[in-house]
Length: 216
Image (tube, rainbow, N blue to C red; front, side, top):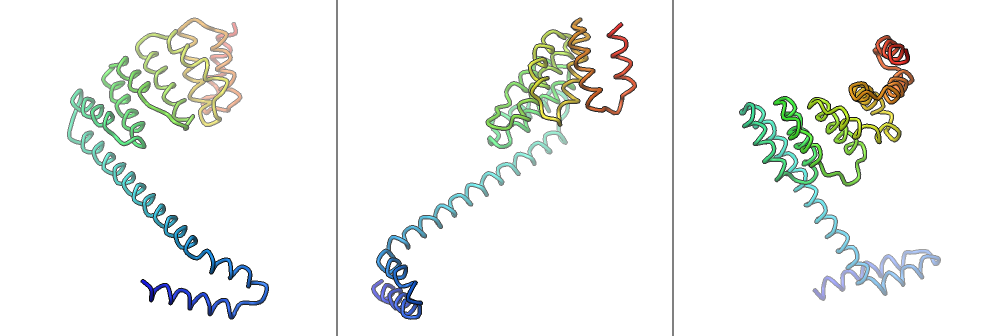
């Protein structure tokens, strides 16, 4: 240990001797506080190693979850498939939970279990990703609409219409227009179709037809 410290001092002395005069105060400070600097470097390296380990663990867990989803979808059918996906969602790592619940909701919709689908969309916990939260809300509205509850779907969709990112303007307003029509809310349906018209959807003729029909 003493020999290692002597070697370190020797290196610092050599650097200091060869340094220009303007660098001497800095070298003196390095020499004076070398133990603190070494400790600081050790702490930084230690934290980096810990973070790398955590990141590897999370990525590894996420990879295992993706494989598990694939195996369940491949080897099971119907209700059994849904039950196993739900069980997986409940125990999935936090960075994969939303994906698994989206899969569960999709399977529930296929099985026409609309209440369950709405609940799985609701179970999606969102920390900071507003777009995922919006998509989950859109899913809840879709489940309500398929269950024949247009008013409930409308309640879910109306608050979203004025604060959605450009990427979701079309799907939200398309679903809003449908829910509003079924709920008998012509004014909201017209507004939704007008937003679709402005957004420039591929089915412009259909949107123009619906607007003309609703404005009669």
